[in-house]
Length: 193
Image (cartoon, rainbow, N blue to C red; front, side, top):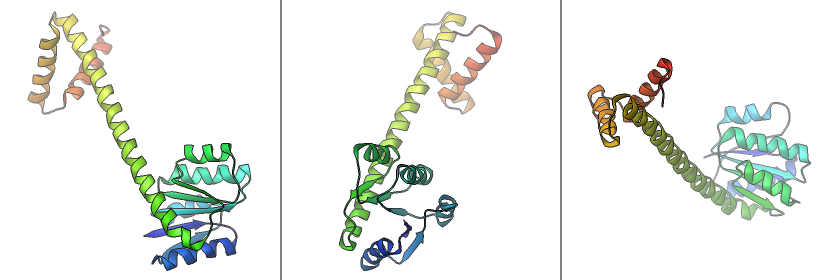
């Protein structure tokens, strides 16, 4: 597992590095949060990112949250002090573990495990949400195509659906693809439902 530590103080980074080494990790890279550090992290393609921010300013926190949004990887953030706004911003940015005043090497492994588990759980929920949104959008498209067929061919709703379904089967396409094509054609002809 490749782990990137974002830190600009050697002492604090060494605590994280020691904790990771004791837990058996050896593919560890320390990246100072300066210059094009986000691009450098992306090139390293880490499996997990640990951010050690100490007492971050609002600007520093914002930069770190850009990293979180860009990477889509489990991220654990260590800070010495926090407030509700910082916690909210970190959660909104997808930080998997937000640890206040907890930087000790013996805590690194459990926090790393927690960050990975939370990230995977969130990713699963996000995938299920995306799938549900796609199903709803497909259903709306099919309903609109059925309405077009009902109006233009004077069909009942089950017959309009059956026509879409048989057309999809005959063309080896999904019903929603046929529905989208019908809606596009209807819009071009100016008689859409």
